[in-house]
Amino acid sequence: MTRRKLSHVDEAGRARMVDVGPKRATARRAVAEGAIAMSGEAFALVKANRVEKGDVLRVAELAGIGGAKRTADLIPLAHPLALDHVGVKATLDPELPGVRVRAEARLKGRTGVEMEALTACAVALLSVYDMVKAVDRGMTIGAIRLLVKSGGRSGPWKRKT
Image 1 (cartoon, rainbow, N blue to C red):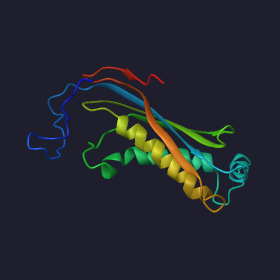
Image 2: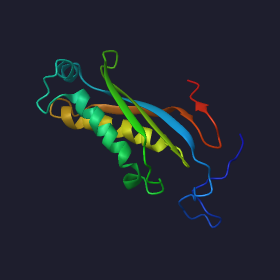
Image 3: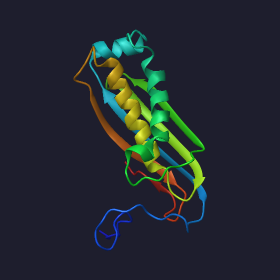
């Protein structure tokens, strides 16, 4: 396995924000996904849009977009970014049963948007939990992961499995 230097650590081992000023702005994109598993009863209520707090899937999508926009407030070394696009799609998955979330972030800039896509997923899933917890406190959020990223010096990357 090749060892790579961590960009957020200085020579003395202290955390630091990376200086992206000298980098060239390029089109960047990241897509992430995650899921929340819930009881059959909770799933039926979400599917029928009968959760007391409202439309779980639409609220989760809006929460995810808001989360992406607040990434730099939540992740200490993330740069505040002027995002060109954030798209979040929450869909029912009867196999779980539960909800799957897919988030995409794009911009033209000097640093990537992986954290924004991942944060969008996490916040959307937390929003589902918040809206459905009265019915099922045992829901499990998991498998939040980056699927693809493009742009920047390191070029494109795609999850193999």
